[in-house]
Amino acid sequence: MDNLYAGAVDRTLTDEQLAAKAREGDAAAMEELYLRYRQPVFRIVYRSTRNTDEAEDIVQDVFLKAFERLHTFREQSRFSTWLMRIALNLCTDRARMRQRRQELLEREAEHKLAWSHPDSPDPLETVQENAFNEAFYTALRQLPDHHRQLIVLRDLEEMDYEEIARILGTSVGAVKLRVMRARRAFKVKLEPLLRAIGALE
Amino acid sequence: MRHPCRELERHIESGAEHLPDALRAHLTACARCQRAWRLHAAYRRALQAARREPTPACELPWSRVQAQIAARAVSRRPARWLSPALAWGTAIVVALAIGAALFPTMTQPRGKTHARATHEHLMPAPADMAHAEALDADAPAQAIARAENAPRAPATTIVAQATPRMHESARLQSPEAKSPPPPMRARGSAAEANNIPESDPMMRARAVPHEDAAFVMGQAMAGGTPDFGYEQAFAIASLPLTPFGVGDQSTGVEYLPIRYGTSSYEGSHHEAVIGSF
Image (cartoon, rainbow over all chains, first blue to last red; front, side, top):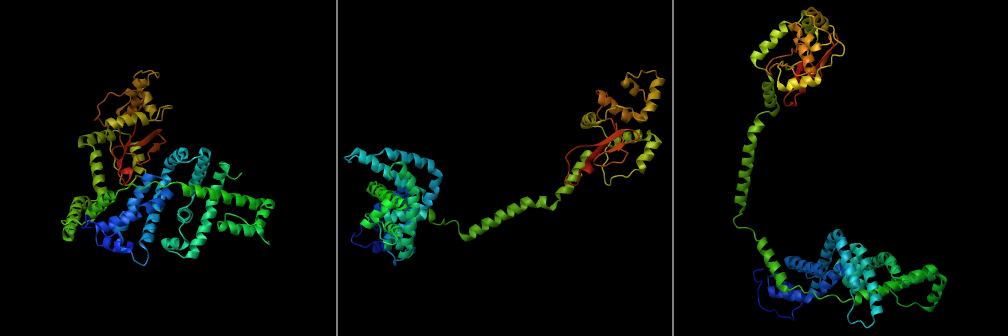
């Protein structure tokens, strides 16, 4: 950490090479890793939180935790996988805290409902899509953490089963089974919301 | 197709977008499968909408994360002055200070000191005791004999001294003279001897001999404010004393405990002040 204000780093280095340099306190390597994974981590976190400020806070915590615990990173797995695991764990922690602030999130959801795509050509279609979108995220918030993570990783981020298995530290078969269960639980939550917007007519 | 419902379920689990014609025909006949397929289609549509929603760009700058990393690195650096020896030394000094502060209170039993202080506080002055004994000497011999034969509560502190608080307690606790007790006959004859009418109980009470002073005082206090000083002893506690008070059936006088001062945990009977009113 003493070399926190070092110069530029070779951008052709792999994640694992950068991680090795960052472990020795190379700030440039840390910055490069941060710039590479800031947005992917943010996207996953944002899918879970739907709140930009909160997602940025979590992203900061993810990288702080990652750089502090780089000595525990074993190069048997990919850096991105390891980073995503940290992100998911922090999302879970935050989700528990967020349950206490449910009312605030409800207001945020109402605000998003009124939001529309400025580039959309068809306002009616935009309204419908927003209604679907809102129903989707409302149901997603109602899911337990372990189900929500799988819906985000598999259905929203479209990660393959192998990658998810590596992130969660389990087998591909187990991931498939858990994804199936997560979808079933998700549909149970989603059905009344879709019915309310007339999507099941 | 043997089990179209199960087949449709498998298609839904695999995330299929379209169904084969055979299954599509089955949907028109099976309401449950139709509902499941509609839900699946709506789920897919909601999923597409969620995927299409643009994720905002993360605008968290590296400088902020870097500053946090630096701050944490500083806070994690161990303080140099806090060497293990110094830490142990500080802990020992603090422990000794706490022990020294607690030592005096630990060496002296709390209950005994408290009880002694209460006892000293309640004990009357020798002059007052002598006055009380003088009053006692004037009491009828029968009453004394009755009192001596009755069982006494062990280790009971008897305080026969009128204090402001006792006066007030007496006013509240002395029994009302609804029917005159037997000793009142003597008082009645004394009143008759002095030609005091029965309609004036206060005058009649003042006329009684001195041996009934305690009862008279109780009567007078029940009826109005007596005219004597606070230091004057007015009660003789020579009858059986218990923490709960006793009743003298022959005289109709009830002896009630008056708790005075702070009760100690050793028992309220040590502090019971009994007065005959």
